[in-house]
Image (cartoon, rainbow, N blue to C red; front, side):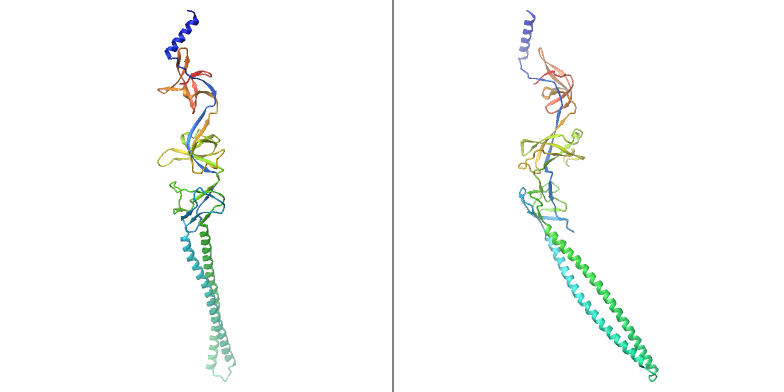
Length: 390
């Protein structure tokens, strides 16, 4: 038997021994390993106008009386929400009553002050006349008038003069007091008028109107539930918002362990839970600097990130939709790459099946980074080596 025949027989025997199985073959290649991180996210608009209760003095809690249907399209100026105004209306009634009473007091006070001053002026005129009469009597008295009578005329003149000075002082004090009382009443009038104006404006502002055209999206309470009619909200809470659906982005939470691998500008693939067949693409635009617990029930430490969406679908996408996000992470330097399905593990040791003359042999290898479909090989294989696929 010559050498060629011997090899043919040997191969035939090997074929029978292995069952002549046909295995696909892959090759070790050089390239950039792409890894993936899978996270969850939520769609939001990058341009959203939030509508909150107005800031009104002594009001911290607001009850929602009416809401436009969520998802409805509204034009600018359309009423989208009404808040309860009963408390403000009661306060307005009290302030209006105080304002009316104060204005009446001002009118009454002016009349009373004028009457009092007029009375004092008459008293002053009378006192001056009495003084002039007493002074004339004293000046006209001569030697024929008894001394005691003359002294009496002199005392009467002094008393009359003092009375003139006293009434003048009363006029001055009354005028000053009238001005002060008037100023106080006018101050009260300004205060109550300001209260009435502020309450009227506050009542008007409890009707929320759309600042622009768009779609109505309800806000959420601290428990994450959608706000509804009859519910109470606090100052600073978003009752609803009007997002720009043409400028959507996705907010996501990323585990702390992936912090070193996630960077700005990395490409992502987005699949909406409501439409998982369609894939959208985008890039990471913001990375949060603060780590936090995901929630009270899951003590997983995460950080927040934001990604843009290249071609958002305003007909399909709505704020609040959940999505599955895949972040593509590419190594900066090329390495030897192999199909991940070609690698098996025994007791933690990675190995591959290499084709051989009598079938296949196990080849231990050392792996580097592991991607979704391919892995990098550090040791055990060379560029171009053939490896069997299962």
